[in-house]
Image (cartoon, rainbow, N blue to C red):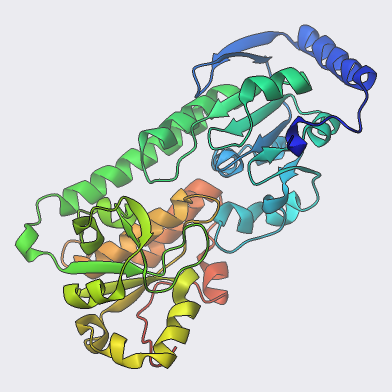
Length: 361
């Protein structure tokens, strides 16, 4: 039995007492019913004043909603600042001071009860069952869809549910409107570009279930899909991130290559031992190799993915994006979602939009 289903520290009497206190507070404050992302009707306090987040995306979207001050416990993975997650750069130090209430989508029941949140916000990607966790803790569990993509319906639905739960409907609408604006902007600039006018593109070093080298790529790569790019990985029968045979990339000989910073060190090592392979590629020869800030860390970070999208667009479609300053746009995106422009912090740590020369890295 997993740790999340064990009750080894708190006695049944203690649990009953906690549930009684929570029930009394709820009766005093009043309750309301919301429908969560799993279609469950959940009774929550009229005014939610404290939460814990379990599973992929729950804490990230809570930070997007400017509700991080409600958080009274975090998963072990969320303690401390992490460069590959923008919300962690902004809030990681504060989160490091909070108790650990789970790990990698597995909620720790005892620790959650001791943190005494009004509500448990649980991602659909969590390893626990919402009804079981709710029954075991006596604390309402609200499931949010979360998102491992970009500008998909799950992202919108997560914001809507959180807006209702946190009584931050205006903030949810603000983010929804901004996402719509970005979607429309990208579509207007790229939808009518003819296929024969597009450069072929490959992204390497993509992370999935760990770090990968040049062979790590992705079909349906969010930043490319949003701008109708000619992603060569889309020509395969694969879906999502996967490892490709390097000879296939050589046969494709893409016009432009992007490299995810997460995999750059592995690619540099491989280049040092096998430069002939890379130097055969047209993009390497012509200096058409560029960076992508790693956006997949504990699933997709929407803010970083959108910044990557504008940089990729500026390289692939320079005429259509000539009026866009990528650095300013990235700063706008980060400020809108995170409340802070983190481009300076990213740059200080080598994460910036730039040309990559493998022989000099």
